[in-house]
Image (cartoon, rainbow, N blue to C red; front, side, top):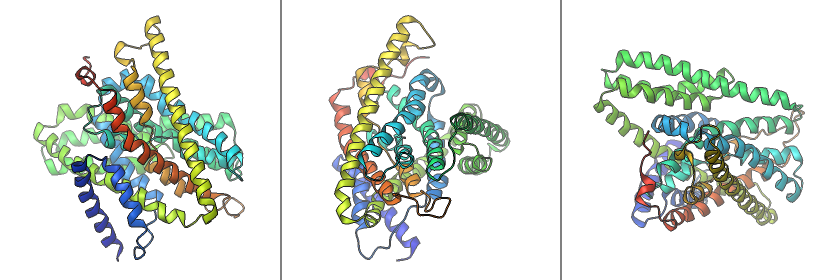
Length: 423
C-alpha cells in the first residue's frame, strides 16, 4: 500500500469512528487511539513512524493558533496567575518529580536520562482534554485555564527537554545560562509573534475585501511564524500563540461577519482532521515501539509507566488545589490583582486536575530523541525512555479520557458555572 493510500485509509477510518463515538457516547480520542493500536498490529501494514518535525510544523502551529485566536484576552488575563502556575511552574515541578521516580525506580536510568524522561512527560495535552470534554458543559473558567495552559506549557516543556538532552549528551549545564536562555527564548517568541502579527494585520486591512486571499493568509501565517521563530532560535510555540492573540484583537474591527463564518468553518474542519489524526497516530506508535523492547521487560516497563502516571496525576491535583487555597488567601488579603472571577472552587479544581493528559508533544519529543551521544556512542536507554513515554501517554489518554466525562457529570455543574463572567 502506497503512503498516500495509507493516509487516505486512516483519514476515512478517523471520520467514521468519530461519528461512531458520537453515537455511542464514548470520547472520540479514546476510540481513535484504540483503533490506532489495533490497526498498528495488522501484519500487512507497513510501520508508520512519527516524524517529530512533522508534528512541530504541521500539527502544532494551527492547533495553537486556533486556541489563541478563540481565547478571550480578558479571561486569559484574569486567570493568568493560575495559567502561569500550571504552564511553567508545574511543568518544571513535574519534570523533577518524574526524574526522581525514574532514577530510583528504573534500572540503568542515570540522573541525566531521568531528567530527559521527566522533560518528555512534563507537559499536559489540553487539546486532548478539550476534545474529550467537548459538549459536557465545562465552565468558561475551566476552558480558559485549560486552553491557556496548553498555549504556554509546550514551550516550557521543549525548553526543559533541550536542557535535559544537553546534560545527557555531555554538555555542561550551567543554571544561570539555562535560565537566561529560557527567558530569551520566551521573550524572542513574544517579539516574533508581535512583529509577524502586526505585518499580517497591515496586509489583512488591505486585502480583507477579498475573502479567499484573506483566509489563505490566515491559514498560512501560523506555519510561517513558527518557521521564522525557530530559524531565529526563539520559541516558535510562543510566537504562534502571540500571533493568534494579535490577530484575534483586530479581527472584530476588520473582518465582516460573513468572512468570520467562512474562516471559522474552514478552521473547524482543519482542527477536526488534525485532532483525529493525532489520536490515531498515537495509537499506531504502540505496536511499532513495543517491538524495540525485549519481551521480558515489557511488563516491568508498563508498571513503571503506570507508577509515573499516578504520581504525575497526584502532583497535579496537589498543585491545583494548593493554587485554589493561594488564590483564596490572596483575594481575602487584597494582595496582587486577584479578582473574584479568578478564584477556583472544588469543581473547577477537580476537573482541571483530571485534565492532565499527556499527548502528541510528549510522543513527538520522545521519538525525536537523538540516536547517539557526542562521541557517537548509542544514546543510552533510548528505547526504554520512548516506550515508557508512550505507555504514560496511553494510560493518561485512555484512563483519564474515559473517566473525565464521568467526573464532569458527577460534580453536577450548575447553569451558573457556565455563565461567562461579566467584564
